[in-house]
Image (cartoon, each protein chain N blue to C red):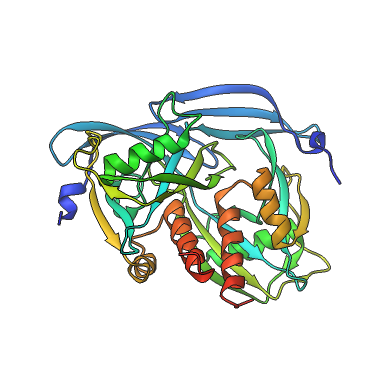
Length: 189
Length: 189
């Protein structure tokens, strides 16, 4: 069994490439365990939160929006990146995004998973919560100014159909729908 | 119901920030549907493939490796990025990575999901395959030169324990383990 030192890549130099509002990009030269050097392209991101929210009618709440990297409109679970100060309480980010994007508020938030999305080049950590007993609120938090959103509520059959049709096509949403399917298969919902 | 034009963000200018071996980075100024402008930070990636491989003893095949963005050694399903020319046949990427990283070859590869990992800023698409009837091969394809890997085979209980302990902590692996759990819950394995 190898030890940590047998795996570790030590940074020799780091070149800062880009400092953005959402991501920072750097290029590292690293020392491999065998003494050779290699380059590592790195993206730093504050992390995000996604929310599985099921209505009283056992439908999933989804948000339709345009995603510039894909040049496509897709359906996702409510989600957003962690704002400064929210890092220790990602469930607050989840509650905020759920309300801003859909107008729903949850009685409680159950942590389902925390996952690095692309550990090969990015440190983005996404937390997924399950929003329990959601209710529409009268005066929800306002949406972000530069976002156009439309809210949908779908059955499991409709959501799985959308995965087939690739209008649902992102990791957090596919994970959340699979979690919902597992809840059903295990008789927990 | 809104139309595509109500969502679309048209690129006004694109600034190329970085051209790497794995990722390209760009900064777009976009025209929002309401006429306002906004900035979009974009990462372009060739995409990748991850493989759920279960042994005859019903254990999952995992690879331990160092991930520079996390400064951490983690356990993941065998995976890798799509090489030039492989884009139309991601199952070939999966078969290659499975053999290079673990020494296993599959009788067939079943497509489970294709998912954008971070659609807010990146176009990276990850395909997940289920490798059927895997067998060790005598002379497997060689590993990449700049990778240090160690192969593990774990039961579902061990894998779920590792998620609790955060040594399994990436999206494709957590998705694959949840898929495996769903197969069991539905009596399909």
